[in-house]
Image (cartoon, rainbow over all chains, first blue to last red):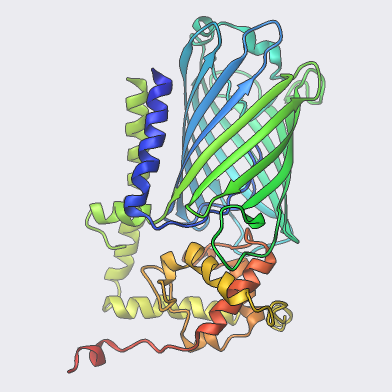
Length: 295
Length: 160
């Protein structure tokens, strides 16, 4: 039921978007976990739906999914809202919670390495299986708990990231350092994500085409935990390596796909991620007009 | 129920952010004698950024200067990424200044490339380094192909 509602929200927003936005070819990166320094254009809203299918040794496989609403508040500030849910096979479908993230670009100009500061508040329960970030000693066995039991755990967490990213010769290289803390208890937990990607062609085609090489961006990302304040390091942590691919369609839609592989026994053996998104241009202006403001 | 509350929250957050930004923009406009002057001042500020391009950057030559397809490709890129703010004909739009003004058209290709790469983040122009370098050069080639169009003064426009 929840899944249906989430899907409906995403589809409704996406279907409505052509009413008030011009078609435009998005230029989105292919990452699922790693962030780069490119923020949403001011006034634009990106509606995104993502899924992760994960295998679970000695337990039930799962399918988690989330909707993201990403808004470019200014050229240096992007704010994003998430709604998460998941289905554990042979168990149940549950709503996992919401997250609100903000990314700030502190420097005015482009540099060799570009920092972005990231702050996120999470209000989730123990059923969250999005694996959008892997921190601390998050390991596969944590996900064995049944949904009925896991949803009793209520977590309010704050997550900070330092995003470092470079665009050079068509390549994007991004490094994220994550620190996360449960506000009620628990130590700071740390994690990392690394990503590299490149469009198949750097030059744009002189005609609109769905299958032109510049519309496809491919790369890889690697992410995992780094322990916590009391036991920093790689011991008892999970790590993943995932090829990533994005297809930016001329109609404004972006499709992403990523098969991910666990790198040690603490990791899920296989994660299959996919996502669809669409950018709505001029969303901020539309809202301003609703309140009598001028675009 | 939780989902409905969450949806309400996201709407509230986005609306609040937009309203705050809109109020800020309107407050800034109220301080000015009129909208045209305000827009002119904003444009002047953004044109002023062109002068900040380092000499080395401004002297860069467009490697696609002789590419026969660069203008057509640049036009599509402009429609996708720039027209929303600068208008379909690049003569200035809701948020962005006229790109056919002499300040822009007389700038060197290297200067325009530098501005595209760095943006004018504090004044609302995003960084476009996410476009690969050849695509930014294609955009520059298209912009330079447009030629100068002087904005028509408001008084002249209403005279018969």
